Length: 122
Image 1 (tube, rainbow, N blue to C red):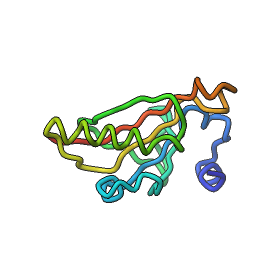
Image 2 (image 1 turned 135 degrees about the vertical axis):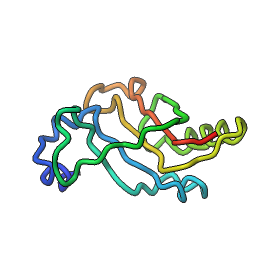
Image 3 (image 1 turned 90 degrees about the vertical axis):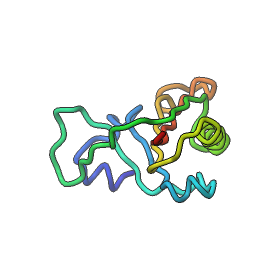
Image 4 (image 1 turned 135 degrees about the horizontal axis):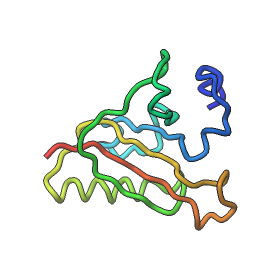
């Protein structure tokens, strides 16, 4: 995280609520949810210049929000993948996991909020 902060010339204070990670499609399909393949910072739309800037792929996503942090994500990945399978969808890319509320925003673990998005095709 510190290396990303340095390379992006951004203060870590802007990371609050805007940091995420991705899990590869291959890891999703073998239920390996604790190995992430990238970390990212959400930026404002007018701040899209630079060698590290990429746009998240547009498309359809199956999404879930849950109260908790990354350590609690495996059960929610499994639940979302079950939903995808049961509804005839197919995973077609890396997942996006984004922390919305964590210990930087609230002292109460009951307030922690995380979102998982998995790209799908019908």
